[in-house]
Length: 142
Image (tube, rainbow, N blue to C red; front, side, top):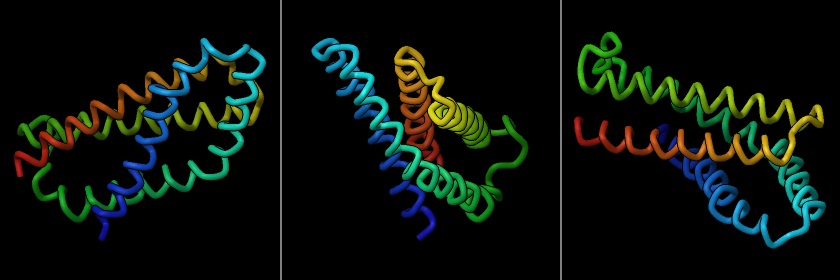
């Protein structure tokens, strides 16, 4: 149950970020700047309502998995291939969390520019791709 909930939250989060990077950024050139700003503001408003719950649940289930499933095989960071992959995955996930918190804060404060929106999404997208690759590699080690 824990891993299923974690995977659903991860799919939801990654799916939204992938949509924003792959589709939303590509329509930017076809829309007037003012319209794109309205689209981004709409996304920010919706994200502030939904994403904190998704990200919170994603991290809570991740911590639960760490304690219940991986703790016995982790040992000290970088002491084995598995613990190295898990440690890097945790560091990347914490970086995503920092990105998310600063983006939500910037959105609430009104300081989220279009460029910042774009850079944040590309960075989170790259982080998420790396996390998925690490998770798949960890799966092969178990």
